[in-house]
Image 1 (cartoon, rainbow, N blue to C red):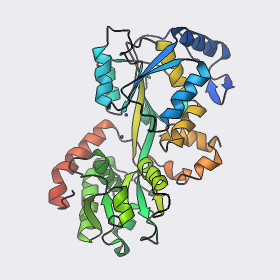
Image 2 (image 1 turned 45 degrees about the horizontal axis):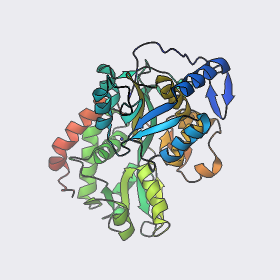
Image 3 (image 1 turned 60 degrees about the vertical axis):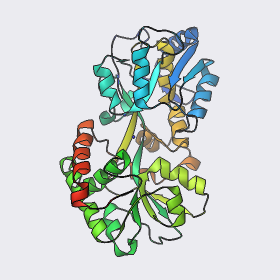
Image 4 (image 1 turned 135 degrees about the vertical axis):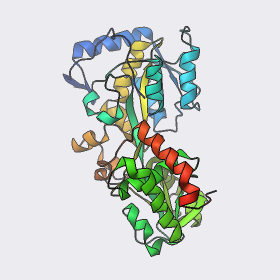
Length: 371
């Protein structure tokens, strides 16, 4: 489950908040009008790697077109973060339809794209509500949405919900707990081990990798760990009654299962680790003003709620929740909003350190062959 930007001062500056237009906090009416006019003159926005069924993007793309009358050229919806970066590199001197204006990539790609001069800086009007640990201070990349590691629980089998990592060690959860990947290779599984370790280590990131291995070693020794790669089918069949995975996958599966069986998604009380994606504007964007307007739209209240409808927590979630801006019917579909207040965004360095430790020592410390 991250990005950032800066190169030259933008021709259109979006200044301090002065109005609230269509539910989105924006800059002064004049500067926003100028940006809209410039974007409409360009007439198009080119996106890449935005599947319509991912994080509510289908509705967001349609909403932007309807609001501003700007056409969207969608490149390769199924591309990965690396493909997005390569598309910028391959089209540096090309202002045609294959050159992306904007990217939505994993966290590690933001700093590297900045270092390579592939993205440009832009700070949206709601910049101050983006957590400092989820954005580049110069505005080259900024977190857009995230998921946290959560427990997806089959309520037909598990009668008492675990509420924290330590609960998973209880004897009533024998042969119940699984990961959604192999922690020797899967980022999601590695992050789950890290999250458990962060809770065990009292929030000390430096000790999280080792503590996570120790925790899963105890879980395996107790007979509670199921060494298979869990998925919706294994939850439904009862083979993995408690599956540790990203909350947006768990929530989506809950809807797909439609009560057969009934599942509950629990965010642990501690060790709430977020995997964040980031937005950025290409340094070579053919439509730079449309790109900035797209960012304003995504980081407006409307855009953030659009992501949340797709079960991806928008980066402004905590601020919007405290301000009462999230519809009650949408909140009712989610774990308690307060559960996300403890979410931490591990740095790339912290992730790399934990990954090296976990992948190298899993067999020795835990001894479970996940497959």
